[in-house]
Length: 257
Ligand code: COA
Image (cartoon, rainbow, N blue to C red; front, top):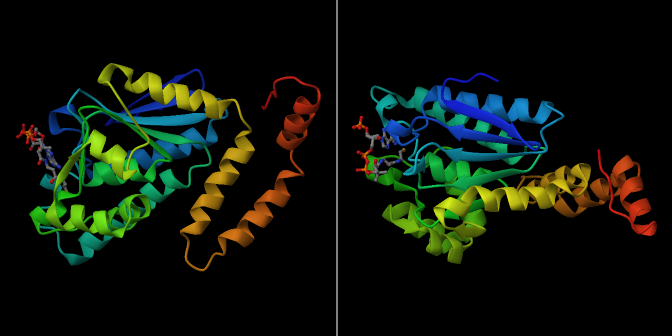
């Protein structure tokens, strides 16, 4: 995998993706957004990859937002296309059949907060800062932020953060349910790997099925309960189900391939 703005490494079945524009606080230019979509596809198709961790290069930022320098001269139609592309890529993160964890190592603003929110789990280091400051620029969140922030922290606080442009620290993000854990900066990756190792030990088929069911709750026109019935039924025809139940009855650890 060769990317211009991402560094990738596969370690013990975990694809670690580092967004690498530290001099621009890892701001998401068009190419970086495209590359995130591509790396998710590659992670999904590579059978040695069991999960993905996304982080930012340097000590200051996860991602400080969309690249504002690309906004100059953009008109309505191009703005819509930018938003549609960002939403499509972040949806592919959210719907990735393998678990995706955001290791938030600093500023997660605008598109950075939106990227973190599209991941399945978020771990923040103590120096992380979150916010949707787009209104300061005469913009609004365009990569799913107006919707996912409500899903994670509820309408009242989501509204407040998005219309005041306030930045919150990692502990406030934890209190609001925006992140799952807060660690010291040097423990951030270890915590993400610890979580990923727990997920790696269970059925990958069941994990992707849970991801789909959770997403169904938020999908217009889809009855999540009905969707769960179908997904639950499908499990019974899988090797993972056979292995999981057999291992339990034989009092041994399941070995999922
Ligand atoms: N787009 C483009 N460039 C960005 C950027 C963004 N979203 N965020 C930071 N950068 C660039 C700065 O322009 C600067 O580049 P330069 O050295 O070539 O001038 C570099 O990253 C460092 O940022 P700087 O502002 O000097 O760091 P800081 O520590 O003083 O402030 C922030 C950090 C995050 C508070 C500040 O950079 C910021 O407000 N960024 C924009 C956040 C935002 O509005 N995001 C939503 C975009 S839609």
